[in-house]
Image (tube, rainbow, N blue to C red):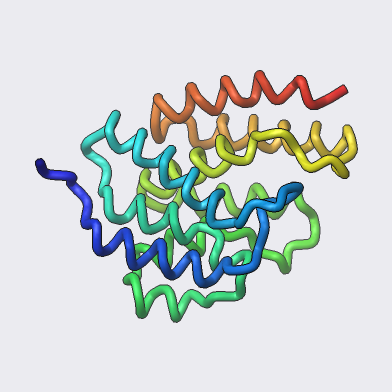
Length: 182
């Protein structure tokens, strides 16, 4: 059976992500952060099944590596050297610019950079937010939860054309997230 993606490339990216995120926890849990990365790649795999025209290796590598620049300090140069220019550009676009102090502007900047990338990168962002719309950390205030849901709507509005499957899932998750806002 032809998978359409390279298992060794996947393993290389997964291992790199696991090492980069080693010791980190998913916010509000005791679970290792690599679980988030795994869930994002699972969502991307579902999108790839629904849309065979996507570059599977690009999408999966970016799914696995999407937070390494933003959350671990890994550099564009290193990712480019290990995984190539397309992956490095995708991961860079998926990383928020911490030098932008305003969170709303930071999100808009990231979405603008994602829109300049191939559709596979859009798919990763949809998958990331789907995965993040889980029960929020207990310490989050109601306004923070409302803002997070509002960001999810902005992501949907900006990137929904990337994948009907993931766009529909994101809308469902956005709707269900209302139960956490009281």
